[in-house]
Image (cartoon, rainbow, N blue to C red; front, side):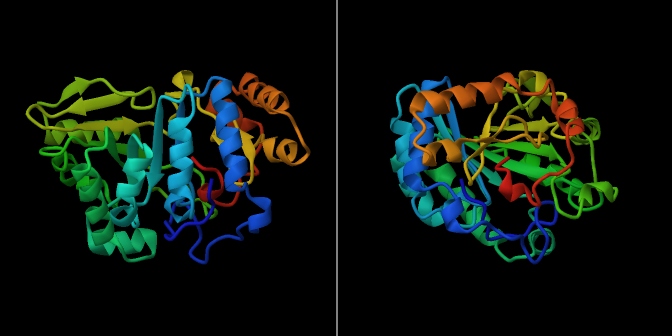
Length: 310
């Protein structure tokens, strides 16, 4: 829904940024609301706003309210870097947002600046406290793990779940940056992440989670949970029914696929709700078997993860 971001994370975007599309090529708020309604009519029950940074969208609260008010939509979530949460979280709560995922890869100030190329760790932590105080039904931290960078912070992140009803999710590094940092030896697989958790917390117990949280744990006596998402290993693909709508109105049926289905063209060419719904269903019918099959179909990824909306 929004390509732009106020960070420049090393695994997502080159330091100088990318060439963002002009606003005329992006979906308007009215167009986004219409597509949300059509998606719901065609079976979508959960809406997630991503980016880029969705909180940079000037009408994000309006979009959240529309999604939350749409018939048959059961939950509305948002993934954010957290920099603007302290100010906007109350509005989002009132608008009907039911879940927030905060992307935060380190609790160390110097590492935060190194990975994001920006200041702001204190703002993110304040935003986290704000959403926890507001008692959102779901609050999660997404931590992209990189060998020899933040993998030694596993225990620090797990300790955040001691008192807070928070799910910390360790995510495998994915190959979606312009300079392919994932090929530099920084990748740390789900199996090794689990080994490190069990080494530090031998008493950890298996718990239940969402389809993407194939491995979820809880330390006895802790309020929150810890999860591992094998985003690159792709052992979760069999349970995936997600569909992504990019900021410029394209449907992507797999994060690893280059195939795109142009809903914006239908919108702006007077396409009916039925026409658009048919294209949405076609995109889902053509969804690859898994991420490996999707990746084999092409290698012309968009320049940055911000342009995909993962």
